[in-house]
Length: 326
Length: 54
Image 1: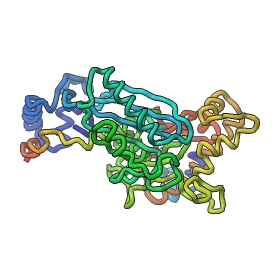
Image 2: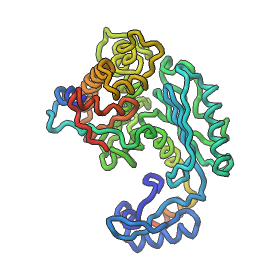
Image 3: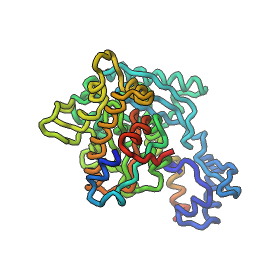
Image 4: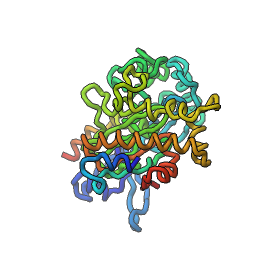
C-alpha cells in the first residue's frame, strides 16, 4: 500500500498472490486497527473496494530543490497532496537560507491544514546533485557550491524535528514516473530531467538503481568531448556543458541580458527561430547521450521531464521526435 | 532527440526505447520525494500483517 497509494482488493489479491477471501479478512482486520481505510470506487465499470492507508496515520512532507526553484508539499500516507507551495530561488542559492525557507513553508502549510509538526512522520527531500543517501551530503563538491559539505537531511531534520530522507532529484523523478506516471509498468526504464541541470534516474528490475556510491544516473556529467568546455563538476565536455541551462542561454544570449532558461522555452514556444534552434541542437546531443545509455542498459522506455520537456513541439518539429506522452 | 538516438542505438531504430514526455510534469520530483518518504515509514502493524499473511 505504501508503494501504490490505493488498490482495489482484487488488485491486492493479484499482487500478493493471496485469495480474495484472505485479502478481505486482512483488510477488515487492518481497517478495524485504524491502519487501512476503504472506499467504494469503480474499476472497469465494476464497483470495487478501494483500499488505502488510513489518512489519520499522519502526514509526510516532500521538498524538491532545483537550481532555480523550490517546491514543498504535504501529503497524507495515501499519497494525496493536501497543501503545496512553490517559489523561485536565486541562482547559486545557499543551504542555510533555503533550508530555513523550506522549514518555514512546511510550518505555514501545517497551519493551513490545521495540523502540527508532531503529525509529520517523515520528509522526503529531492536534491539536484549526486547524494550520499546515508550521510545526506552531496558527494561531489562544486556542483552546488552553497551546499558543499552540508549534511542536508540532518540539517532539515533538526529544523523540523522529523526524520528526513534525501536522494537525487532524478532518482525520485524516476520513482514517481514508475509508480504513477509515464514509466508505470516499465520495470527497466529511465527518467531524464532536462532543466538548468541534466540528470537521469534509472529503474532496473522495478527498483531505483543507485549504484555502488549512490551516484548512478549522473547523465549530465557523461563526458561527450574530453577537450570540451569546463563543467562545474571539474571535468571537460560533460553533456551539461552542451545542453544545460547555461549552455542553451549562452547560445541565444546575443544582446539579451538577464535571460533565463524559462525565457528561452517561452520564446521557442512563441516561434523564436534562435531559441528553437538552440533547443533542437540540445535535443540532438541528448539523443546521442540517451543512445549511449540505451546501448548499456537497453531500457524499455525513456520519459523526459524538466523545463525543456515543455517544448515538445520544438523537439517534434525540429528533430522528428514522436512525443508519445499525454 | 529521437533521430539522434535512433541513429546511435545498437538495436536499431525499430527496437529503440520509447521516448515519451513525463506525465507528472513539474511536480515529478516532488511526488517522488513524497513516495520516498512514505517508503521509509514503518506502519505500526506491518509485523502483524506479515504474521497474518504467513
